[in-house]
Length: 74
Image 1: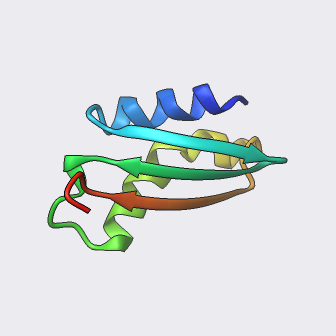
Image 2: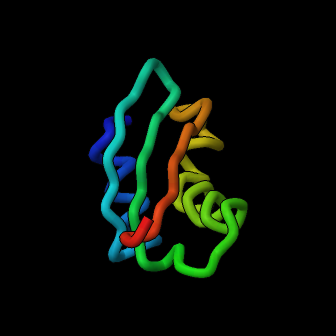
């Protein structure tokens, strides 16, 4: 799996998201900015991202996700 694949999956689930990231082995480090996060707790934001990456996590392509989830105003 490549970082572009991760970005695509997140943008399918969160269409207006801006995603930056990198892999270190099978750990992915992400910064995701989206208006979809407005009014959501940190846990709810993370749940949206984990849901988008469910298949890659289940298959073992991604072992760990380190993320920063922000609204455009943050």
